Image (cartoon, rainbow, N blue to C red; front, side):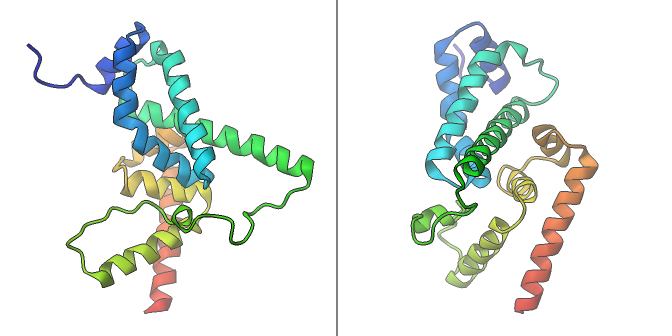
Length: 193
């Protein structure tokens, strides 16, 4: 009798063997995080759902290629980020072709859509909560790669090495993105003090 849940890596191996239950388990484990990461990149609820769904489809199709050299989460996040970047490239091409502007129209997006999904601790004081909200709003203004690196480090607790694998960048480049992001945030909040 197995009392422990199988590892992500074991589930991925079973997905490669076409075990539908294993795929369902991985989707259940990663669905919320996948959406959150996708949303941090594409900034649209429907697009984030589409990208995370596409990432799970790619996971299902390519589970046999997972070699286990990295953690499953790192491998899957790389697939997810690639789906998001592919989506943005396709969307940018259509926007250019149709002559649409780059940003969302004013007043059309849901206020919740504009907010990141910060960790909410009900014990935190209102002042601390407001400060964290301001920090995440500032994170939204960072470049997409800086924003994604910060999200993967702060929310998903990935190491610099894991972030580098997810984003297909060198560790040095990830450190530069994180350094620039944190410098920008420190400068912004230093000016507000």
